[in-house]
Amino acid sequence: MRTRIVHEGADELSYEIRGIVTFAEELQKLGVDIIWENIGDPIVKGEQVPAWIKDIIAKEVQDNDSFGYSPTKGVKEARECIAEERKRESGVDLSPDDILFFNGLGDAISIVYTYLHRGARIIGPSPAYPTHSSAEAAHAGSPHITYTLDPHRNWLPDVEDIKNKVAYNPAVAGILIINPDNPTGMVYPRRVLEEIVLLARRHNLFLIADETYARLAYNGEFTPLAELVGDDVPAIVMRGLSKEVPWPGARAGWIEVYNAEVDESFARYVKTLNDAKMLEVCSTTLPQRVLPKLFSDERYETHVRARVEQYAKRANRAYAALGSIPGVIAPRAESSFYYSIVFDDMPEKGTLPIENVAVRERTEQAVKGVPVDKRFVYYLLASTGICVVPLSGFNTDILGFRMTLLEPDEETFDTTVKNIADAIVGYQKSVCI
Ligand SMILES: Cc1ncc(COP(=O)(O)O)c(C=O)c1O
Image (cartoon, rainbow, N blue to C red; front, side, top):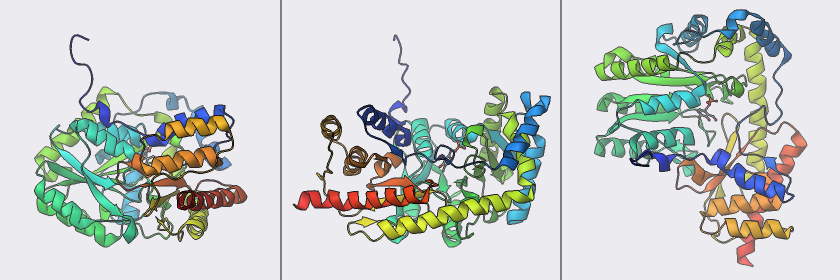
């Protein structure tokens, strides 16, 4: 090329949740039966959307208007419904005009970071859902700035770490909170959120809260950020339909903007997000038309609660099997459908038995020079067919892996968890012998 065409942030884009699939598919071709535990898609794992939800969608499809563009910000009835829900949930007044729909939160995340001034940084959690950390790093053309979620303290955010990094890094313009969190399954306690809000207030920062799992907290102790920002801390809250309905294929998510007017440059930034969406015209219409019908249906709450109960049960069973293995730290998940296991004392060069020679040779070649968690994940895949994601794929130095709590068949779930537990112990022993 006669001029540079590669983006400064090109090396920052990585998504191990799908990246691991390439290796898994290679092993599949060599005869390994894969148990997909990498991706947070309940539908792929066999969860059935109830017939009454499908009926609502089918009825909406019959309306010709569902095939048209929608307003740039989103279908008015959907935004009004979300604003009413926020009033009920948190007692806050959110104007429907402060809601902007996207084609899933993946789209929202991309636009939110792309249109931020190049020098402005958003500090985010480590480990982190990689779409945030990659998009933020790519926007700045340098690695994402992170604060630690501490597995020794039930994955609590290290607020001192945030304080220090904010104080010593004037480029930090905002703090990202993923609550409930992916990949840890943790729910931020209210007092921690209050401390973060205070920090934002003190340093003139804005907050981004990804609350895509808001309704999937097991014990109902989730605190929406909207309740804490008062009338002075600018914030963007992200929610969507993907995980809650679940309907990830709808590609429907939205941002809610709080206190846009309290800061001139935040208001201008938010206008940029709206303008950017206008260039795209609008987001997918059908799911937005379905949303008010779904949220106002009395069966919806029962449906979501029933799903949450299933995940909570599986979280308990996974914790019982994996939570007390020596050498790993695995705090029980408190929400959603992820469970992260951290290596505290894991041998660097462990192995697992692999009968198929071609699979063994391919694995030995693939693990050369990779971090210890990726090495374990590759051996687990080759030895048992279980495909989990190494934690190092979540923009962190914390080593371990994430599995899901999505397997609907109890027996298969228990077997998978047991096989993972056996593999951890086997991998540890393989080096001691
Ligand atoms: C924390 C978090 N935010 C956003 C997303 C993206 O969701 P969507 O399907 O709305 O793009 C995910 C998907 O796994 C997620 O875990």
